[in-house]
Image 1 (cartoon, one colour):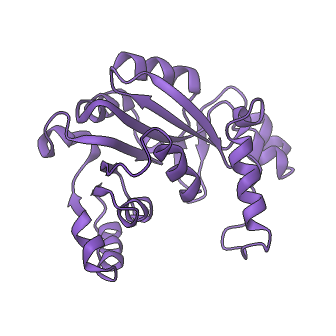
Image 2 (spheres, rainbow, N blue to C red; image 1 turned 90 degrees about the horizontal axis):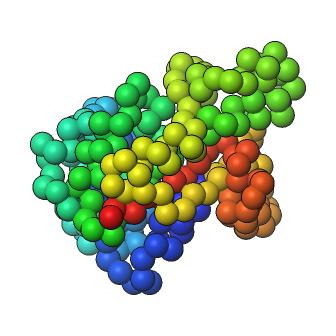
Length: 233
């Protein structure tokens, strides 16, 4: 999934352009580190001390040049104005974060403010229009029925969280000055894969199918996750 997102983000910019990237809620830093390895200047913002410790330990094992391109800041994504000046970044990532935020609009408005003109706001959210897919494909018919007409669900960590709908986020992005440029489906066919399963021999074919489905209707509309790309106007 990380490679798919990276390719979708990079498609917005000329090949070889070095980007200033902010990863809000970076977690263990997987996506941030991939982008730093690719030559971009990356800032990771995270409030969970345990996640930060893992990210710092991983970064310490990287070559010096990559370490110099990535910095880690402890902080809340809702307080970007306290850490960064307006227009500081070419790309702002907010992946797997909105599901934990009850009122996401102020957070998103703050992220748009730190984007440079023409910059990309990259959101990865649970698809609120397809919550019945996972339980339905798993044969959990009661769970599938309960998923219709709601955006509430229990994630794989056992936490009660919230999904987002494409239409509502499209309106929000327009309202904060970063209207939707394009969107993709993520994990169209692989959402029910068992965590920790062995990588299949035909993984490249699997990735090719997921990438194609993620940009093709009607498949992308029933993906487990949505990747929305808004562009700062």
